[in-house]
Image (cartoon, rainbow, N blue to C red; front, top):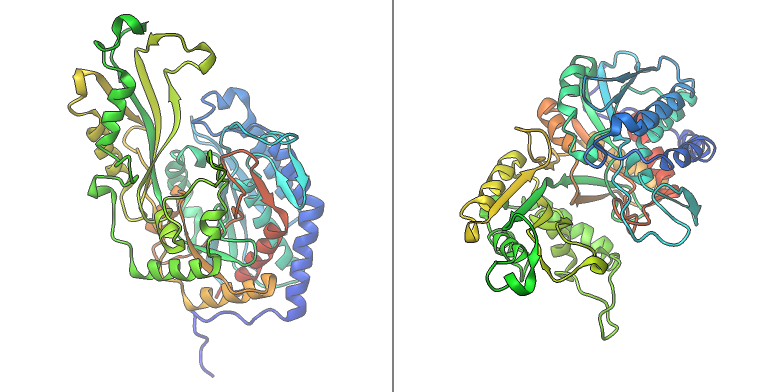
Length: 494
């Protein structure tokens, strides 16, 4: 008798078992997860970048304790859960469940986070960041989809398999509270917990997106990110614009000149070639396949405003393939905040002493984040026009500026088959492959620490879910189906 191929999948779950797992997941979501997420959304557990007094406010501590209590209350055999705290750092939930498969020494790591982005303006009437509400199968509020659901979904997937006595490997969970600030606390925790992670052969990250709500989507790449504050100072205090304008250069105009070093304002192209990379051919082909499935919805799904003539505003491109590549493999600059400007009602005839912009520079997956942050700082600060005081201060801890993106390793045959089977079983459609424009710093860290591990990066951030912005929602049916699909992949782990 031949020995079993270690890369071959385990025997497929029988059809009735797949249905039972799906039903268990659906019931857990309806009866236990949605009520827990309603409570979670109501807590303004903003990430430390947006709430420097997070320790005094206690909101991060509250959501961590609530999630831990919920998980421990599910009664999973062998569950060991700990809230890990390193001095001066945001807390992390670490849980582990022993393997139920004889002779399996591998570990599957589940990842998510509980910290949130700030409120933002523009929520529809009756909705709000801390006002959870279920409408038309969607749970609205900040953080539910990005991605407070992750721990709950991970536990539900494991629980569904155990309830049906489906064998699975050892499972470990790593749930942080610093992701929306760039995960600057996470490396210290990975170092502290590395020995307890074990032999990691699969990472299931539940913090990503979906091209639509009709199939399972696997994330193939993530962009890196550099954020920070660009400040231009020209005076020590504001002065009468009638007296000074024409003599004193506007700090805003100087800031525009400085940004022109970085970006072509007409096209949006980033000028330094070091911020670009060659797009791998396999990612181009996957973008073509995703574009064929999604069509013009790639760009039409955005909430475009109508111009003066009543027609909608236009994107940078209406070519679906180019649109996908531009939002996943090309660097892009966004201004996400401003300081030094009074609101319109308080804007008198004063030439302001300074202007400050919060910048967000998205980087292609293969560009190193810290090096890009140092290059950006030098580019913006050197040779200031009019000898103004120009400073760029990247966010994050000193020496660890910028987050590097991630390009997924080749998908193993067993995982590709398992993903396809799970998508067909729970969505009735083939699995889709798509790059994402966001950043998950952990993925690059884990890829370096466990280079042979497979990566299942997926999530619920589909069309119009609008994480970070107003009217963020969690598509409940998609979340349920995704959870069941994760359970099926977990059962197929070799």
